[in-house]
Image 1 (cartoon, rainbow, N blue to C red):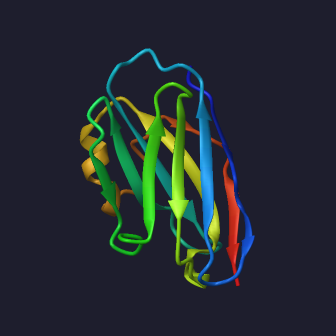
Image 2: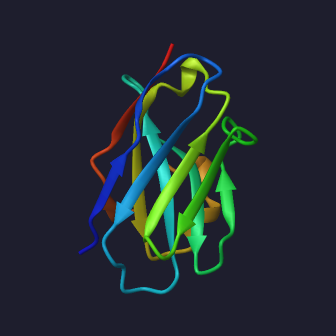
Length: 128
């Protein structure tokens, strides 16, 4: 069983930056997909970014491309999401997720996360 714990959310003005972290318990697989999703009130959950652990390929939703950067520290087993040039429409609860199927990483732009098995509880990001 994989445990994921997010942190780093908060309130920021438009144009500002935040870095989210997701600490993961050890995953027995050597290659897998880790991703960030977000959900705003009244909206469907949407994929934001994903990274293939074991290959380091990254994938982004069009809405965050060139503003957000996903990365992973293998030594700390921690996933990050650096968010720059934040907009009010980025306001949402952000969740990290993990799944063994690396195929899911490439589908992040159209994913609602239904295929992901492991989830954190989320961290709130508010942009005003």
